[in-house]
Every structure is written in structure tokens, then in C-alpha cells.
Length: 94
Image (cartoon, rainbow, N blue to C red):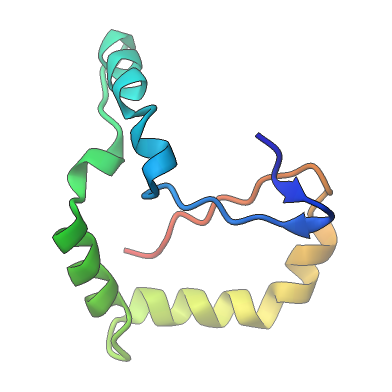
């Protein structure tokens, strides 16, 4: 999968329907691995994600606010260091 489409950045939402299709394969892979693991996507259902997003968006939620601040303050420097064929993974605050 290409991270750039037509010269423009593309955002891949891991909670989109496209990723649910491969979830079964991810589970099998994790259960065969040593040590065993399960994809963290299993921890969040739609209501849970909505609740987290509502809480993380609050002004008093320090990790999201600080993360946003750091990214905004350093956006140009970050963008200059990213190669054209790279993927950026934003793991989120929390």
C-alpha cells in the first residue's frame, strides 16, 4: 500500500472498514507468535472510541493537548525529514 496518492499524503484510519477485513489474519498471526499477542484494535468498539475521542478532546486532558502542541510547533521540521515513500504512524496520546 502506498502512503502517497497523486503526490499528496494519504491518511489511513486503522479503524476503517478496510482494516477490519484483515483483522482475522492479524489475530491468527498474533496467536502464532512468540510471545502471543492480540491486535490492540480489538480493545476498542465504536462506543469506546467515541468516548475516548470525547475525553481526549477535552482541554484538561494533558497528553492530547501536549501532543498536539509538540506536533504543531515542530510540523515543518518533521515534514522536511520525511521521505516521499514513508509512512507516518500516529499512535495517539493516552
